[in-house]
Structures are given as structure tokens and as C-alpha cells.
Length: 486
Image (tube, rainbow, N blue to C red):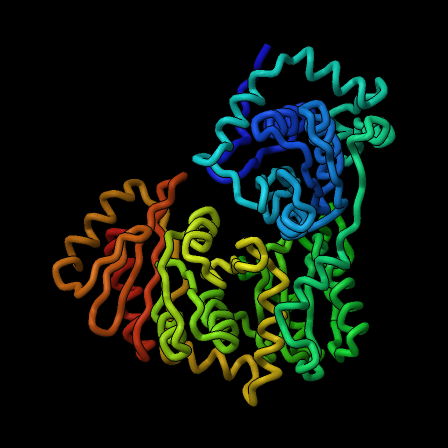
């Protein structure tokens, strides 16, 4: 009997444990992935969540039965799978992670050869259809075989117990464990001139996620090169029970620990990550959180300082600051629709060296056009080492020149009606209309972007101005009143 799988989303796999995702579903996904891609080798790994290991091993059993050789990188962040898939020249890669989702969730991100993302319109639907078609009795028989008859109960699974026996996987001669951390560290440190780094003190908050061991490896890489970087470590040890809450620094309530540690230690800046560390968030020396928008500009500058003829990709929510920096550095600005699949596709098409989103996703050509949460702060450290300014001074001048509202969400009964109200009010007086993603209207000294959510009746607003924070705040308040019909 086939099943209906609700964990497949537009760009990845996410679901509530037991009701939407368990070991049998992981087996189905692995087997269909291998068969649909005709994959002969697949890199796998998992984050620190309690269920990531059992899901990863069940996924591996399915991959093996689908004809693939499995290379297990262990407990890793998402970007280790991106790196490993390309570095090991595998036919695909899967990381088991739920990033910043609630603790009762887990999921997977899938890529094919070259770390090209697999999404709803590039093969994820085919994998879903195939996974749904396997007979329940066959799935159970194969799981029983790989578990040596010791299938775990749902309660044991949620607590982190694995049904799949690793020795049985290894006995197939199609499963190996491999450590590529030193190769990864060599790669990411290659983005900067480590010999030019000045002594820095950095607060690093892994949020008890997967970032801790990677930071330790980077720290050792610095020591091997004689670089004097001091790490002040906060919530450093991986812990799938997340004793300090799910790591998601995008939420203001999750920033205090990093900010306080920066101020107390006198650090040059602070960095915090989400659970699978594909996003990093920066804090200046006063502990102030820096909006991702301004980090995009800094990283564009970092690359264009090395070679001014590079193309830079950015999202259309707010971009005047980014365009201004690219123009000053004589680079080529290219606007792309928001979202990792769109950014990566456009980067490949344009052979862009860097792409950035205000949501703290940063993409790099030499990192298989994928996002990394480690490369950005390394580039910022290099920028600081080359400048007489501190991070706050670098960012403050950009905020003053292009103040922005940050993204503001409004949950509405009728998002379409709200959008019409806004267009009726502002469209005729706009000097430019942009529909790269949502609707952007520009005026002489300010602009805004409105995007509807694809999954809920929510409109997302971003406003920016040129050197006029009062105008930006006035227009933000005015727009929210129109959107919310107040």
C-alpha cells in the first residue's frame, strides 16, 4: 500500500516528527532519491537534533537499496554537505536538518551533482511521487533487515534511538564514514588573506547547534597559520535538546546572550548562527545587531576590493545601499528574485562571484554557488583588518546613507485587497516600478517593496530612503496604516 507524504515542500523536506517524518519515510526518501537520480554515490550528514541520526541512517539504508554508495560525513552543518558533494564529486547530497524550526520537527535539504539544489520544479516532485509509491510491507521488511529485527518504538525514535544498525549498513560495502573537515577549513580560509589578519577578539554563539565543532576546527586552522584570533564561546557545545532555546538569531528575543557577551568581553564583533549554521548574524562591538541588508553591502565590497569586474547578485526587497557600494567599486549589480533556488540559479547563469539576501543567506561562486554561514564573518574579519574603522563605524555610515525599516509582516484577512489599496494610493506617483519579486515602487528619495507570502495571508513590507531616516519612518508608518486599513 502506498502513502501520501506531506513533508515535501517547495524547496526542501520539513515535517513534524512521527506524523509527517519518521524512519520509514526517511527510507522511502533515500531510496527514491537514488533511483530517480540514478545516483551511484551520495553524501549524507545530519545536524545536532536528536532525531537527525536515526533519520540519516534510515535514509542511508534507502539510498543503498536504491543503488547508491553512501558517504556519511557525520554531525555537520548544511554547508558541509554542499562542500562535500562537490569536493567528493558525488552524484548528490542530503543533509538531515530542521534549522531553526521547532524542536518537534526535522527535515532534509537535497542537492544533486555539483551541489545544484533540488526543488519542486527541478525534481523534488518526482522524488516525492516515487517515495509515495513504495509498498508499506517492503519498506518495513527492509527496515527490519537493517535493524537486525530491533525496530525502535516511536517514543525511542523521538528520544534519538536509531533502529538502523550501522554494522549492517557497513556490511553492505556501500556505506562508509568520512571526515572532510580539514579540507573544508582549508577551503573557507582560502577566501581571505590570513597573513593580513590583525589580532581580533570574537564572540561566537553556536546556539548549541552544529556550528561548535566547525568553529573549533577553524580556530585550529588559525593557530596552525599563526593567526591571533581569540574566540569567546557562548552556548558552544552541540546539544539536541537545545537547553538555551532553538537557535534563531533572526528573532530579537534570541540576541541578548550574544550582545551581552560582546559587551562584557570587549570583543571586536560577535557572530551567532542558526542550528545548521547556513546563516550567520553579526553584532558590532557595542553589542548592536546588524541587519543582514548592510552585511550584503559589506561582502559585496570585500569581493570587489579584490576584483572590481565581478558580478554581484542581490534580492529586490531593499537594494539602494548594495547598488551604491557596487557602483563605487565598479562592479556589476544584478537583481534576482528572493529565495535560495532563484539566487543560486541566477548566480550560475551570470557566473556571479557573490550573492546576498537581507535574510542573512550569503552565496559564493567558489562554494558551488551555495550559501555559507562561515565565509561571511571571515570576510568581515578581513575587511576590519584592512580598515581603520571598526564594524560599527563601517555600518553606521551606510545606515545613515540608506536607512531601512527592516522587514515588517502584516497578517491580514485579505492580502490581495491590501495590495490593491497600496497600489491605488502610490502607483501613479512612482518614478519606477519593479516586479522582480512582489511589487517595488520607487520615488525621488524613498522606495518600498511589498511581497505576499505563498503560504499564509501575510504581506511583507520593506522601506528605505536616501539619507533621511525621518522620511523612511514616516513612510513606513503611513504604508502600514494603508496595508492594515487603519
